[in-house]
Image 1 (cartoon, helix red, strand yellow):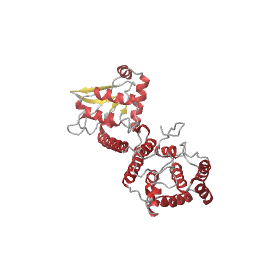
Image 2 (cartoon, helix red, strand yellow):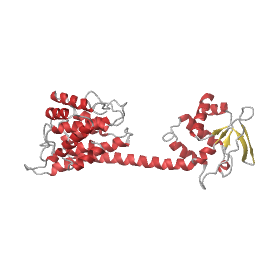
Image 3 (spheres, one colour):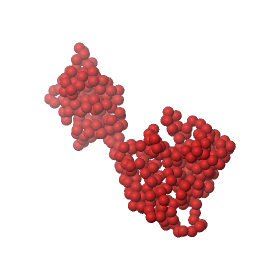
Length: 366
């Protein structure tokens, strides 16, 4: 059966090569098409002529599958599979002649009928592909901007000469590289965590040496050693990997957690403890388990455990870090706390990695 399917044409000034460029830009990312399918569309478009893309024309090719396979150095089966893939995706229409062969007729540069591959669906989706190109360009711009901001924050932390801040930044983003991170949510979480470290560093460096300093500037129970009074390399000792500030804890929390935290007075340890207690009750953690964790870990560390548990409980059930029993998880963390085996550095890395993280034996994010 021959196909005389016509199309509405490309916009004025748009060539078939621009149509092909738009298709190739989004075919893999948005439509998940195979390389063979993309190469096949390129082959077919190059086999057509510019007149085939005018309004009311037929845009088709009818070369035999075996010849197409030889031209692309593929097998006929691969060509048939790619054509079927493209047809199911809505980019072409296939037809055959009465004897099962492909054929067509072109008169005075215009196709009158064709039994083969009709590219009208591809032409009709030109506007759609341009929109997806714009979305992809915006997405890439967002990624580039986020990566640039992370590099800038990391640079500022390195220039601070604070060994503690640099150690914490290394725990959040080992090696300082973001090129292989393809998850925007994870990049934004890393940026938020690093921003919290930089903000805490700025507050600490500007703080005076007074006894009434706000507890918001440092964690009362979590660190083994406090930030130095000037945060300089000469007077500061290396921060424990377990040291987490209220600002960083808030950055690692979920949106739901932060909304409740605002009701309790904002980013400070007393408010974080109260918020974690409320979140623990919502997750089914009983009061006895919460109190035991507070006794074994300290109130602030127990609150941080709840933040981590809540984040991991929201993961996909198939994820290796998904928390199925929050009550048992907090109880186990309390037991490990007695033996000094709770690695908050590794747990923070697990929060930042949303795409099935892989940890080394030291618990650091790879």
